[in-house]
Length: 206
Image 1 (tube, rainbow, N blue to C red):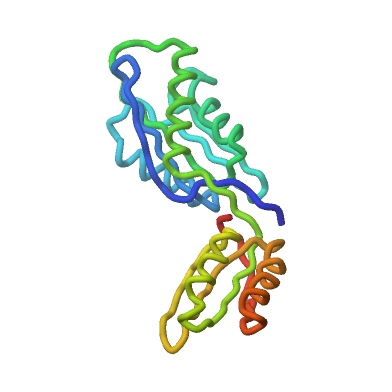
Image 2: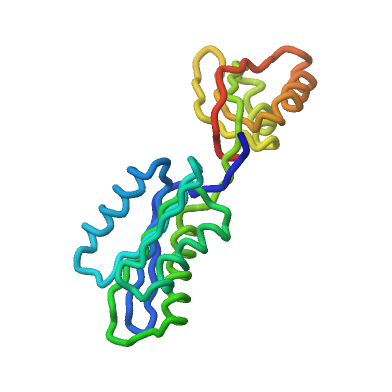
């Protein structure tokens, strides 16, 4: 399975264009049910908004959906979707809420506004790359802990858990194609004293 880009967490950002308030929301989602639930939660939160435009893209079956929610066709949902696609994001749902400020923006103005709302939303959610990773663990003496930390950082490993007892046990995820090189480096650093144990595989941030 290939690596892919998504957002790390749910977030929002907003701006005002000619007295219209635009609020861009983003959330990582895995299924249509999750996307629809998120869209409905925003619609419920902003029940008094003029429009709640949305778009989402799912990795599973390459599903893409969008809605103009009453804006002129092609001026809202498509621009929101385009931002997701141009950033090569999947498993992402974006909702751009608009409170009309009394001044018409025109078709071009709407496209720019909804594009910008989508852009600041996905940026606020922190775009990340997910890749097939190995989940590894290792237990080391306290005297070696700092050197191990530096080594893991140099290999862009994600530390998921650290337990301090008689020794220090670290569990982390690492891009699959870097595991052998990391083990070789650890062997050199520790004169063969320490070895990683593989405990699983998963998609993780790299």
